[in-house]
Structure formats: C-alpha cells, structure tokens
Length: 123
Image (cartoon, rainbow, N blue to C red; front, side, top):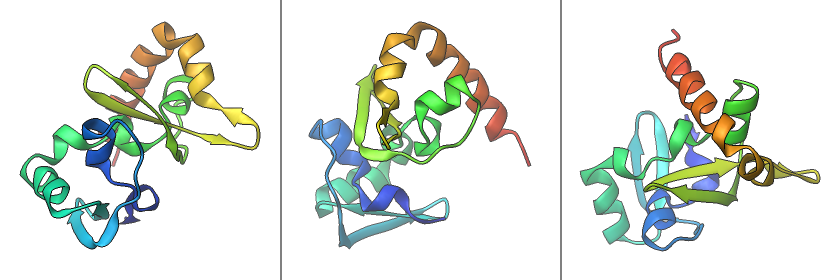
C-alpha cells in the first residue's frame, strides 16, 4: 500500500523504454497502491488495462524472487524488459541484482515464476 515504486510511471517502462518519475497530478489508485504517471495519456492507458503495465512479481526484485523466494524492494531505475514484461531489480550498496539475473536467467526466471505463483496464493 502507499506510493508505488517511489512514484515511477509503470507505463513509461514499456512505452518509453526508460524509468521516469510520474507526476502526482496524474495519479490513480489500483489494488491499494497509488501510481503516478507522466501525463494523462499514460494514466488512461493504465486505467484501461493495468495488468498490461504492472511489472512482474508485483514490482518486487525479480532476482530475489527467483534466487531466495523473497520480496525485496527495488531501484526503479534498474530494470529489464523481456517479452513485453518489465522486471525490476535491487541495486544498492554495490549489489546490482540485474547483473546476477542476466548471468543465470535460465534458472532464475522459472524459479521466480514458481515462487511468485505461491506468494499470490498466500493469505
């Protein structure tokens, strides 16, 4: 709950291929989280089909979900787009998990998918 990923625009990842902070003037609440968008057009796209723009694993770190089955906060500027999905990663204190993910994506991706499916069904 609260502000989603430091106010970054989830639509900008896919449309602009970059991390962009949204503007509180263009905000929308979805599933208890407040999303900011760079403009009304991005907000309208999200409202029409939020699932198309939400990052994998609820916006938690993809590497941590795959490697440790944990929800870890992310650096919104550290992301990867694969097959039309956005994956976000932790990148602080000299640890860039995107690098680790890229080195072992073949193992981490299916593990993250399994782990996230189990997380979604927890009470």
